[in-house]
Image 1 (cartoon, rainbow, N blue to C red):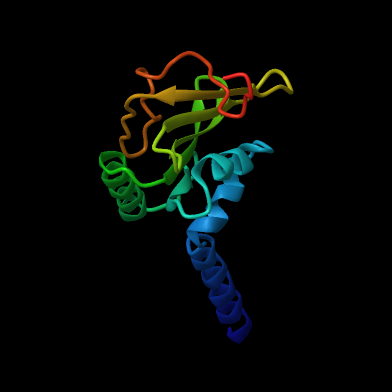
Image 2: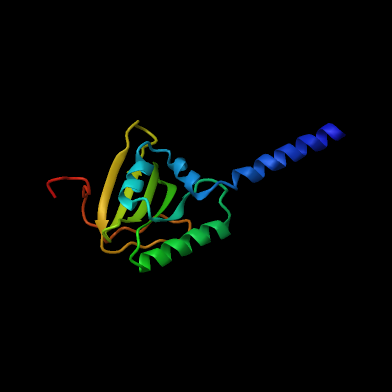
Length: 155
């Protein structure tokens, strides 16, 4: 009986720890190499981190997602650097995407689209006049320009 209680306690503690990750750790969930580094480079060290959330999993809880959404909505209305990202599956494309405001005030949509059928990732970085976020839905980047490269020296 005591062993089964210990086992239950350990399983409960592990389950709690999965949902208790720090915001900075969540960006490691992007699943696409280079995504987090690119977002960090665009946002800069002083950016507000609204978090990165894997929306294909049962966590995070609605209150956590809503808090991140509130942060992103507040920062979109402001002028300070920030980053907010999600992992979601579009039809057959596992996608990490983020909205980022860089220190120079420019707004970016970063998306790394994977494929369930090929081992390739399409990397898209676009400058945007506006971006819309909604809890548990893809980032609305319809107003963004065609592909841009913020690191191009010829721009």
